[in-house]
Length: 288
Ligand code: PXL
Image 1 (cartoon, rainbow, N blue to C red):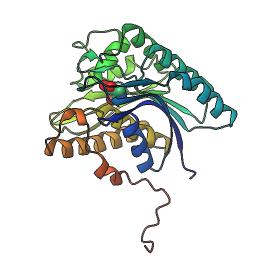
Image 2: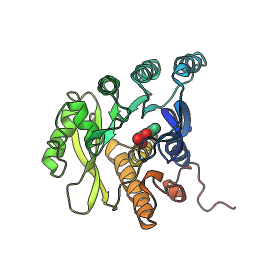
Image 3: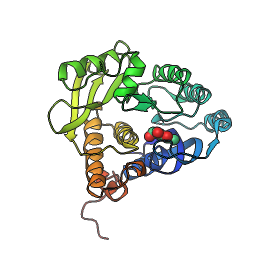
Image 4: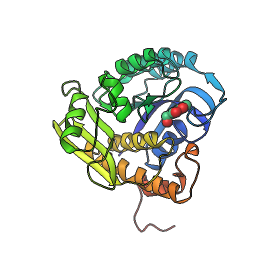
């Protein structure tokens, strides 16, 4: 199988483990080539740190799109995440329009907020632009907060603790079945956490749950969506890809919680990456 290739449009935050510092190592560990288009460089992410630097790379987005298009590059997926402005979101939409097609999935993580609140840099105008970007997606990966923003409903009303409700919300997010949905933050049985998946290919709703690890760590959504995107381009069906993402995220959260690490530093995931077992060309029993 040729190495699958994903174009990743996210920021690069130097400290705090999120976005590209998660996306790149995770996809590499899965045996997937990651081609980053960094939208901004920040000294740290914006959750739990103050005074971060912000180097806006918006001016690079259209020239990079044009160069890659001119080179005739093709991607198995375009994967977008955190954005710095509505202008960036519009340029991410242009990128998707340039590359999306039968062999190229658009995976949009509509990063906007968490715990019922938008992130401090996300204006209502940006949330509107994000909904428009998500309308182009083949697969979206919202958390509960983002699902409420996309649907324009109250966060409290979007409960994810009963199977029937979860299925209803996932279908409501599918734009009448046009896009697949992996809605994270579902907890339908005690001690578990995971996602409810609506697969537009089958019209079915399935659950991908893993043991709930105590604590809440920055970048968890980025890790989940990275594993999901990697598994999808490796040919996994949606629910199986989401199950891999739920299992790996749960494992990383457990390890991080056990060490009592500061939540803002993110998941201590690097020592576990080997478990994603990337090499499709691994030869079992080969001589060292
Ligand atoms: O994990 C989402 C994320 C990504 N990038 C930056 C962020 C956040 C969430 O706060 O601040 C810069």
